[in-house]
Amino acid sequence: MSPLTLFGYIFLGILVQVVLFSALAIVRHMKAYQFLQRFLSGLGIRPPEESPLDTLKDVSGFTDTGSGPGSWKGLRDFRVSSKVFEDKDKNICSFCLSPFDGGALANYQPGQFLTFQLDIPGKGGDGSLVRCYSLSDGPGGDSYRVSIKRVPPPTDRPELPPGLSSNHFHDHIQKGDVLKVRAPSGHFFLERGSSPVVLIGGGIGITPMLSMLSDTLNNNSNREIWLFYGVRNSAEHAMKRHIEELAKEHDNFHLRVCYSAPKQWDKKGVDYQHKGRVDINLLRLSLPFRVYDFYICGPRPMLESIVPGLEDWGVPDQHIHYEAFGPASINRRARKQEASGEEFTVTFAKSGVTAMWDGSEDTLLDFAESNGVEIASGCRAGGCGSCQTEISEGEVAYTQSPDFDPEPGACLPCVSRPKKNLVVEA
Ligand SMILES: Cc1cc2nc3c(=O)[nH]c(=O)nc-3n(C[C@H](O)[C@H](O)[C@H](O)COP(=O)(O)OP(=O)(O)OC[C@H]3O[C@@H](n4cnc5c(N)ncnc54)[C@H](O)[C@@H]3O)c2cc1C
Ligand code: FES
Image (tube, protein in one colour):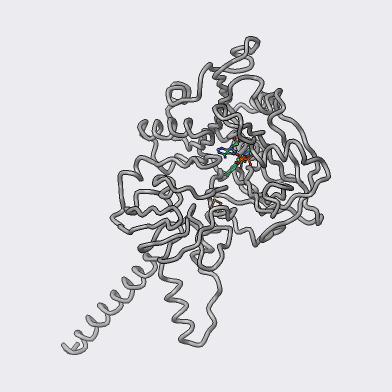
């Protein structure tokens, strides 16, 4: 072989390696789709509308509300097919919903929620009252079920009006009524599998847990599943008999009910197992030494005590999943500590607040709240559009694909982070 041929081979080898590494780097940096688009356009071929990377997100469980049997975009009419109280105090009421058009029901993941657009005469009468409610039964049935707790005025301010939507549901929504509903969405859900799982529900935070529990037990899986359910006493205990029966029927289901303020007639060992709140000590004492996935939904104080408690116990971040109903996102310790090095100024024009974004908050909504700026929110998961905010300057990046399409020039702060210096109308 002549030196020239040898040099040719070496050069070709290096070239192949360079091409391979470049391709790998492009894919790694999530630019493959843009690259493919440019490449196909260059050849005069119309590229696909959707990024193959978006399709990957769907596979990982993200619900695209616009595809699949029974799915829909925007609002769809549902008829209330039943209304049933679930607790002794009659403060929690379940509503079953069937499609008004008689069509199929979109499937959902256990833990996801529905978004309702309510038209309450005299109050948000322009139809702008948006609220989210978790699906409280496992998927696969012929209707959806949500279970709604009546929200009173805050105890220290009884003069305020009670919760608009929840009281409207309790007092005015009856069997046969028609409601406007967005498709199931949300990223807090339990995937099927065999790994042991711990569900922790506080108060009305039991609803997504019921869906996860029901789906797991309905699928005849032997998956080890624990439910820690915290309520004040038997008067607030939702679906008591149903949950107790499930625990009797399934050996793999371990139920621990905690009453923080038991009534005189509530019997320990019968109505409940532990007096007090669900806390990290109870989890440590109750759970065998195993790797669990934790799913938590409840009031802010509960999340603020249990999530850091699990982190201190050594539970890895990816095994802790939680959802709060309302403006109650909590800052994960790990995330707080590792500011990402990004530095942008964010101006909330209407509030007259400018602050420095250093990447340590999960989202623009968390950042706004930490800086005393109020932005309306519903789902905090990009599903309902309540937090939609106009951008006057700058750009945001989405942490996950939102289900709700924001208007041009607007963003959803609950699922976005600044990409450069930002001015928003909040
Ligand atoms: C993903 C998700 C899932 C959810 N799932 C469920 C579920 O399964 N079941 C469920 O019951 N709820 C659920 N929620 C909560 C639900 O969406 C509503 O937030 C809840 O029903 C309260 O809404 P409301 O309209 O009744 O109360 P709001 O009208 O929003 O009022 C809330 C509170 O504010 C008080 N208030 C009124 N005026 C003022 C004022 N001027 N200043 C201060 N306070 C005031 C009210 O008295 C009330 O106590 C979920 C929320 C989310 C985000
Ligand atoms: S709060 Fe629902 S989209 Fe942001």
